[in-house]
Image (cartoon, rainbow over all chains, first blue to last red; front, top):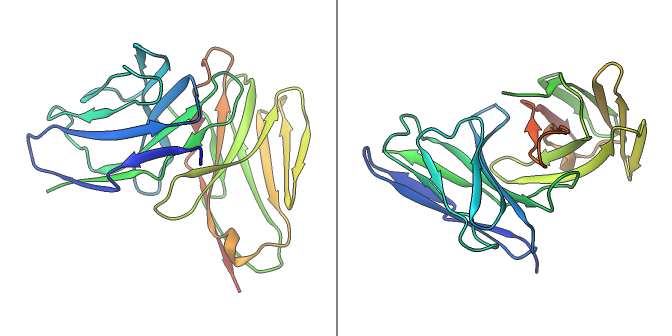
Length: 112
Length: 112
């Protein structure tokens, strides 16, 4: 089945630790996105990539990093520089301009 | 920054009733999309309406777009308990390269 897979579903991070969230898609989409969702709020764009080996900062990129070495994969690293990382993280992909986005099931990150 | 703003923030109705929610946005768009999110899950695309379209239907969903007022509405007819979810509008702007800007969402509760 085609789709977009995020892992893990739940992740716990200690203070000062970097963690990496996985996002894989087999839809052959060119573009991939990372969003952050806080309780009762909408989605805010962290990073996006429209082609392999290229990515751009979104609205809230500070404290995050990404890579796009393969078309199907777009991992997000939450670094220790991100002061308030507890949130629900959503990965999405689409064909680019003017097309619908497909979302993964999300990763809930909690700082302990 | 959030482009779309949904109204109302929350809506509680009984099964069989219609649910209407509105979305206002600030800048010009290529298209506007509506998504549904069940609690703790990823977003699911419902409908996409292009800037040159005024109305679109999909099953029990009806979406309107008024570009002169920079607003859109989503109508769910004959609501069911399974329609309980948060609904988000998202805009795709001409210079966005396919990135979507989401509003804060409308939380809909349908009681049997």
